[in-house]
Image (cartoon, rainbow over all chains, first blue to last red; front, side, top):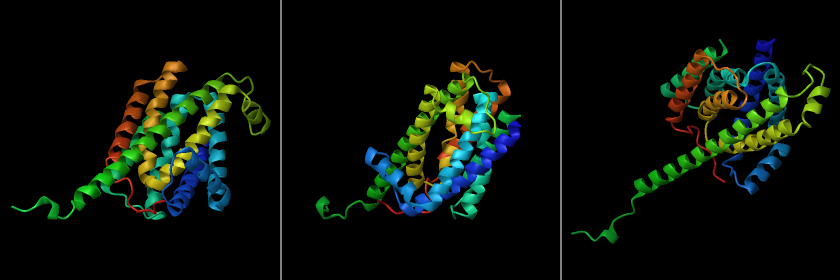
Length: 119
Length: 151
């Protein structure tokens, strides 16, 4: 059961992150001051893909809630990092980001860490 | 000797300075996000572990859990973290943001051990350290490779 929860959480996170990154690249540079955060909240209501990404994040969040109740926090949080390799791959393919050897190696090391933590 | 005032402005140095300022801004937002996420994780885990009902596919226990003050604080911190992360994604690549913010996983293991008295095995510590080093390696790359509009 715990790996099913991890699987659902990872897939929902990957989809949410891709959609969010795509929309935020279109929206341009944003600020983290109070006014900037308000503008971001308004942006969520205006963009359909951002709303879908928030829905996916909600799915991921509720799955995390169920996971953290039965599993240690030190397992649940790092296990969610399994999304890293998939996200790095899709960031290159879908978002056209340049994944150099150093970035790819870093993401791979993170994935090894996740496997160790979950094992 | 040339008069210094007749020399053209140091364009390279200015570009370097603005690049450094952008990097500092990205680092500050990364730290803010990690702090909010760690506080949210700890509060949520504390609230859920002390919540009397077991979670299932039914939505009611989730709604009830949201009224627990620790769970509510955790959700509030997550909502703020979500907005901060959106701003971060407008400044940097997804393939940069995701591994760099993984430093939060190290923090989660530390907080779990310190406040929730969780047992963290040697293997799990090694894994967490790998996550940290991988994140640091990605952090040493260019934070944005696709460019982006300024606002």
